[in-house]
Length: 162
Image (cartoon, rainbow, N blue to C red; front, side, top):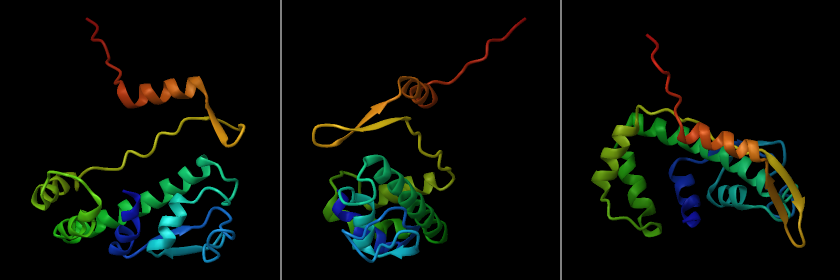
């Protein structure tokens, strides 16, 4: 649930971002161009805000989300490397906001296995935003969609020659 974002953010000590859009109508503390460490509610506003923020498009919001989650992931990874027990702390912090049959021990074991993984980045699909009857609409570029599918789900196999 997105309602857990303020708790996760504050548990991690806040996430530092450079404000990319004009939030003056929504939260005047988020000043465009400034680099700040977000508090819980600021983080929620930063990644959820869309209407009356910048150009009000979902594309802008998604760019902010990628920046925020990369920063959060980096902090959590650092915290895990220092003390894997922090995973159990996070688990307890967000328990009221999740549904799972995994206990904190299982989650900690999975986190331990993930410590060596690297972030593969975000795959974006190119396209165009156009104003619809009520909302901005995104029209994906067909070639970009195909490229995303191929890069995510296919591996090129080299044939052996004799």
